[in-house]
Image (tube, rainbow, N blue to C red; front, side, top):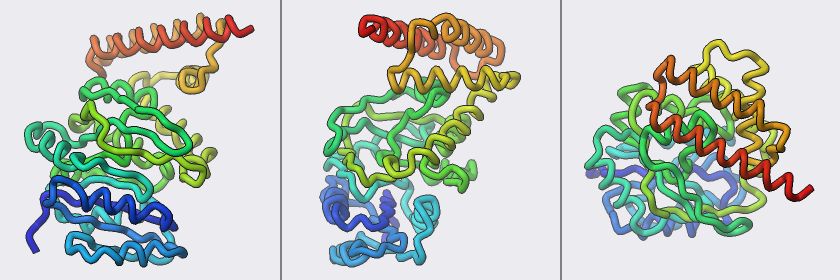
Length: 306
């Protein structure tokens, strides 16, 4: 068989309800030079039968038993991938028709970029358009504070992954993408296309909804690791303050009394970066100013509600 330009890796575990729709969104791509690897991770529902039902030579089904979890399924899919690029896809999402063509064209013309994502449209239980930073230096800075790319949208250069020995790792369940992207951002450029190319289904049975505690603990572990690359001498109290900043911005829970400590912490981060030069100075300080505006806005909002 001809080597495909793109390998799409789609892991599924008991995803019968939405799998057919997700697969059809890939088979309906304007770019046809791809293979679709459906990794059935020991499903006990009808997922395997759905995966085998398409009769399209571009579809290959990998059966794992027993269920080994998302990281094991991704590793199995990536090991079988033959394409120049490897694209992620989830069993409950929908790729828009131009997704693979747009991302592959971008990577073809930007060889310095190792991983490319896109914006997403959430639908289902929650509805919104999620726009993300697009430029490599912006993404790298955003990873100091949390998520910066949408995992189901990622398309990766296989050459980039192999050159740097990058792979999903055990020990970071439910944040395996954040771990991979944080490491990748120090080895090459990451970029997001500024357009919605994937519809992200939100529902109660998602892994992110079912495993909040473990995901939260692993997220804190990664954020702390990232902080220490910038501020190696950070104390436990400073780690806690950094995590408080991130959680407060995410949850909208920053109060007026938090302002002095958080303001001083942002100045500490600015000074640390000027010393280490870890991040592009202009991009980093622009991000700190943006964070400060968000902090002030949230504090004022909470004060008005009292």
